[in-house]
Image 1 (cartoon, helix red, strand yellow):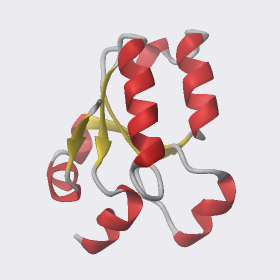
Image 2: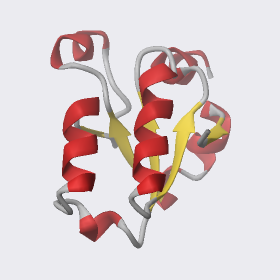
Image 3: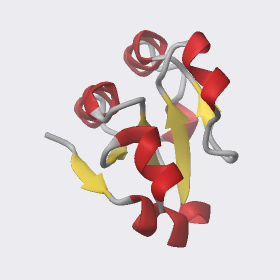
Image 4: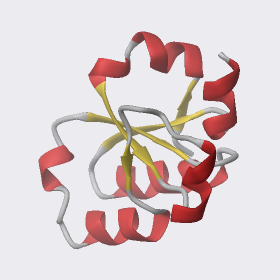
Length: 98
């Protein structure tokens, strides 16, 4: 399983990460982390496997979703493809609480 990072930790290190929101488009209506890039889970996995996001290999990535489940899957898949990825513990709701 991918390493988890708390919202507090991510806020303090936000500039060190490429933050990827793996939720579906309809889930974005409730807001998102301002500095994040939207890339739904399936697309994130496909892009990694097809080597379409190789430019992110040298960066630290933090994934997140609505609960933490899909964010963890995304981070795991990215790690398998050689990326340095963590996931936001508790997903987007934890960002709003901190």
